[in-house]
Length: 435
Image (cartoon, rainbow, N blue to C red; front, side):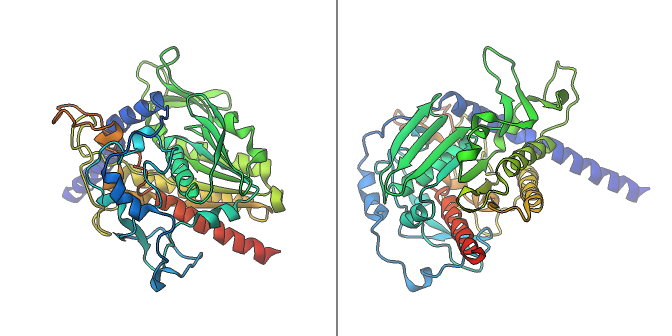
């Protein structure tokens, strides 16, 4: 009987952990995401503080050539398992050389005093991840349309890429609509278009608002046509979802209510959000395959799914010290677990399932940009209180808003795009082999 009781206790503990852990993060992440949803305007760069001058010497795209041990490239490498190591070169750009950084991620210009977080690079276990080469990227996407689709993490990654590309070629903003949620840039030097599509669920959704329902409504079997209508003109699609599925929502499938997540007062079954995330991503990938599959050559499409990027709240979101770390975690210091692991696993499995479905269909390529682990190890890379300019200019504050979800620019998220470039190189090699 003692053994049975012990096993029951373990099962109950595991059940409670899986059920309650998302809610522990929910209260913190939800407030941050709502803030960024309601405050999406960009602003011109603020006047540069003196500390930027010291960073400029490390941020030039004309930095010294890499050492011999940094020159090799292996596009077959597993880039997603490794550790963060120091890199004295620093980033390609900074808060004044790039004009597309969202104000809330411009940590240096906002007075973040420590700059150590800028001098790390990701080192895979078995190979080298080359420094980002903007001209190589532009050459690979020449005459193509690259679209970032999803939530504010998609925008964060897009703005990182734009900052790195503009160190080699200037861009023009062609289109801007709905508070910067739908934008398009053009690099005339290579005839490349780069677009942003706000679609936090990828599938059709009605977002909660002051004048509407107090929950989101998701239609899991319909792609969001705000971006889906343009699938035919997209050459590369980068998808990013996850955090918005934590919000209260009612889910529909086949025209009927499937269930809901945190919907007190509504007569719907609580089904959580994990299976809903799975269904939404499956509908999205199937929709792309159905609309674009079989079109080879220049009409083909490549799809990247950027996996879930963990938050790093260590305290209340509106108190100083919510994400206080100033250096990365060590390789074995932190493990992907709980909600972060569940979200990542769903995304990875759906990518593999879509690959099986699309096998033999010409012109369709799909990869997961599996950043969950390397993101987890960077608690130092968030804006924290520096989402606003000089938050402590009047001394210590009892209450100060923190962003421990998004990433400073420049910052760790630049690495996402370094790996993205290597995926494009691998696809180019495969394409040449198939010809």
